Length: 335
Ligand code: KG4
Ligand code: ZN
Figure 1: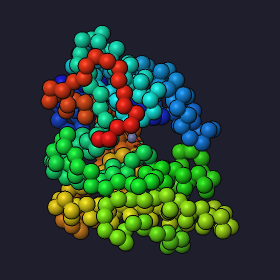
Figure 2: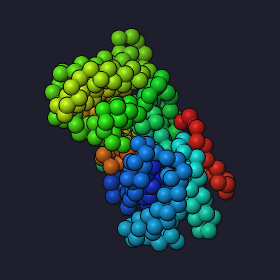
Figure 3: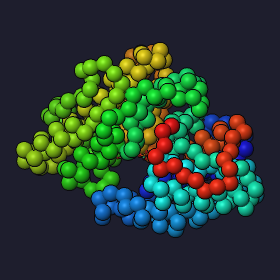
Figure 4: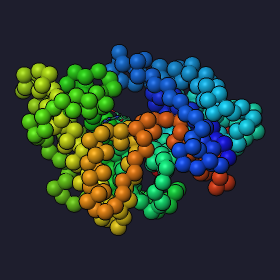
């Protein structure tokens, strides 16, 4: 089955073709992402109306480009998958409208995919994918969740953030130290030059049992440290390092606990923060010590992309699922 995937939930237009007849990384025939970062940068965050308009401009050319890269015509597709939520309603409607129109014109089945299920399944597109059951850590700009994956499509929430998501904490912390939007990756880059231990921040909610997270207090700790400092380049890098270490340690501690609680030794990590090098190294280390395994998608498939939507949609379409012919999105949606 060759499935076209369309992602437009936020500020990235993503398109891909996933071919279930091929195996491993070959199955991803082509994928392309157009990032709107430059468009939103001067506002310091995503402007929903501008995001929708840019998806309108970029989506069709990106579909053409992706099909050309895959060497396929629209007639050779077997299904269309699109992100139906959660996300910005106008942005979602652009992807849903185009996906539905294509499916209708080509007489193909179409399916709306949950954005976080897309993230969760992304590591399974890599070679030697893990088999369920496993534990998934979903860390994006909007979500921080630990999920027990009993089988594909059967998910049990183990814990989640009570306030900011990990990516959101990265972005807000970067902003308060004067880094431009989107700050998360820049903060991580800056942290590479920082001295470990120069600034020590807490590991929130690790001193009591449970699998929930809270990152907003950490941001406040950074705010105070930054305000009382000389605000020089070295200090900024040191604070960035202290903050990153605090987030990474906290995530790693909770992952250990979640694996113990679920009786599993396989951890899957997905979402934008999954691209963070220090988090990847720390979790690799932890998995090695446990004699278990940690699986990440390649960094380009950690952040928002069409490949994960094509893949999640392909699994559902193959299982015989599809949606009615209507343009419907769900901006707030539990997985
Ligand atoms: O999954 P994603 O692309 O979009 C959402 O669904 O939210 O995640 C974006 C988030 C942003 O908050 C961004 O700052 C964060 O992922 N992020 C990172 C890194 N790369 C992206 N955070 C820390 N280190 C990184 N290298
Ligand atoms: Zn995402």
